[in-house]
Image (cartoon, rainbow, N blue to C red; front, side, top):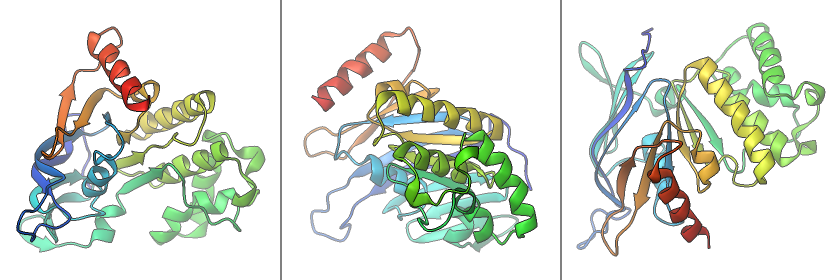
Length: 270
């Protein structure tokens, strides 16, 4: 297993393009020739108005969908993977076909509405990724006990998921996304269903765990306060009928860029 330094590009796209109907005579591309790099331990926020393709982009980056053209390179602890159209390879001394499930097992996911096994308790839901990977229950138990404390759900540890509030469910989702030591976590509007105070509480827990685990994070959000947790910021913008473009902006607490971002998102949300 490889170690990853902060300079390691754990994910890099090369001329990434995507269309839902690439064979159509006048195929419309959602993205065209996107280039993007994410480094180990880095948090990147991607912002943009509704319908511009943020969720489509995160699905591509997480290998949930296949790119139409271009490629995605993943440099993970388990080795290097290359995603091209419908093919996925693992790069070693030779290139071999790889399983999408194998690649995605190195990722964590947090969504706006997290999936829960509602008849099972908090601890069981937290340990799901480890069970899927075939870990023994004796190995899972101490990891779950540690995580349930870190996400602040020790009093609710034996509650079934159907009794949890929205904020408590997101805490479970965050702990579950990180419990198996993923190289990258993909978070699509992780605080979208929460009010401002609860959203801030969730993000503080999220970022503390990401930092402890040295995990890279791609964060999709509409909220400038949530985007403020990122080290780098990207706008996903669509101009008329052209494919959406990913525009990098330097994120600085005191910069004019942040003010412009907040004004832009106020326009989107108004």
